[in-house]
Length: 148
Image (cartoon, rainbow, N blue to C red; front, top):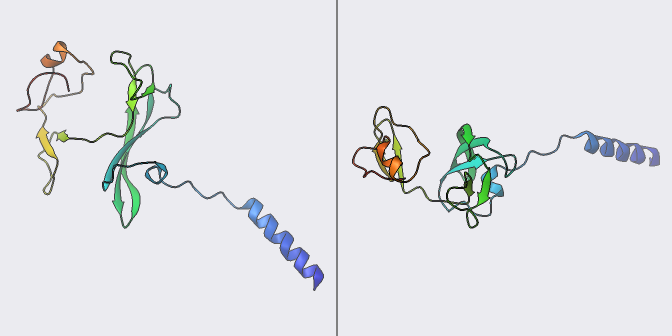
């Protein structure tokens, strides 16, 4: 009997050493705050000096965050900086949690959309410019010219 217990304990120890680590919880579950909504967009980078990363959009269903899509992300040429320390014109992207007060796209807003939205002009694209020069770039119809 004593031998069986030792072998059993040894097998359990070996099984636990070879077990694959549990995958980390989804990013929204690891965040200090998600704003309390049921939809979230995250931008993730390997480190603060990164200029590329991953944009993921999430839906909260049944109390759990599920990724519903993703795309490559581009950040400022000088990486990411905490929003409280960031200065305009430094070619950095601020980090933090932000509300999206309006949406835009090339098609009409889907039925049930609660966020104010607008359609972009045919050749609209993000220019990355600010100030008076940005007023010359494409913009959503009905929106005044000027920086975003």
